[in-house]
Image 1 (cartoon, chains in turn red, purple):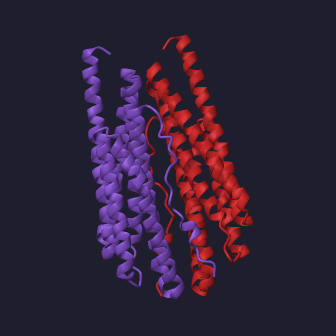
Image 2 (spheres, rainbow over the protein chains, first blue to last red; image 1 turned 30 degrees about the vertical axis):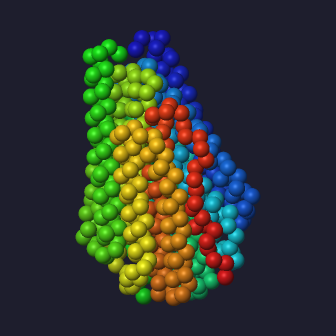
Image 3 (spheres, chains in turn blue, purple; image 1 turned 90 degrees about the vertical axis):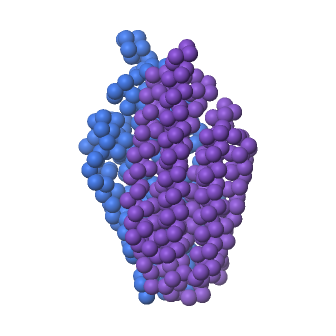
Length: 235
Length: 235
């Protein structure tokens, strides 16, 4: 590429980075609002979250179109090509994060007879807060091409899994204690699972940032601390 | 493109179609084996499914590399470009389908004290069979560029959702009936949810086939019959 086309390429890339930043902040807000709706049993807020999902999908398509057209027009190689592929991948992860926030909102839209005990909700909120912090940080690592920060997010996903495990354990005890708790516990199990999946997508983004900057996949063994499946009590 | 580059482009595309076919058949087998492991409580089979997940991930990366390099080298437009974007998208959906099959296998790897009643398992197997048929058909619609078939799959996802709803309802009654059922019911709830998500990804593939052939997104309202969230009994 000559100086002129390089400048055009940089502008294309800048547009993509901006759009991904935009998607990220919508996604983060969606998580926050979905969990707030769940906590307050606010069906109106939940419906707003569900209605906003289209925005994220539209942004994902915009990123895809822009990235693909840029690849075809500029024929980039090496790091330039990796930047575009990274944009494609991250937009898809953010779209899935939006889907999971929507799933939480769908659970929140339902009123159950019993309100979950405050302590369960506190743990779920902590988990949501951690997941949002992770998302904010990984998007910052993308913007600044900061591999160290991306790796930090990647490793910290263990904490998300650990919180999921303890929420899972707690909910099971409530279900075993009293059948009247089963309905809200089932809902909250799905919500925690959705938050855990958001954590997984955040970890994917961290891997993409690593690949984008370093030019090779992150080969370290992925930290995994999700053991909910082993927690089912055998009584 | 001149005749020579057209021929090279066609060969590139053919490679992609083949790789996606390969991914699809691995993914389909993964679903079948995961559900078989669940049904037979076969932990060894479950571990094999978990170990095979890497294969699908590797194939996804191969498709991505090939598609991106082809876009950069051949600078395709219109339908040629859509074919490559479709390959990118479908490979990602198949990768997620593989993830969901792995999640089912993880549940299957656990032995619980109680064996689920046969009738619950029968419904789950029916759901798995339908999901696999849908996947086979949508991949055929991709290979043959058959929009009518893709639309059929897309509409039939309602049946997957309907089965999910009835399994959900059934499992809740077992949980309410006897606290000893809670552990396996929780596992099966997650399995049914994973199958439902596989159905969603299959529907995504149908939408991609439509876009690839017709050059515009499928604008019809997506059929949605997942109402599990409304089925939580209020007692």
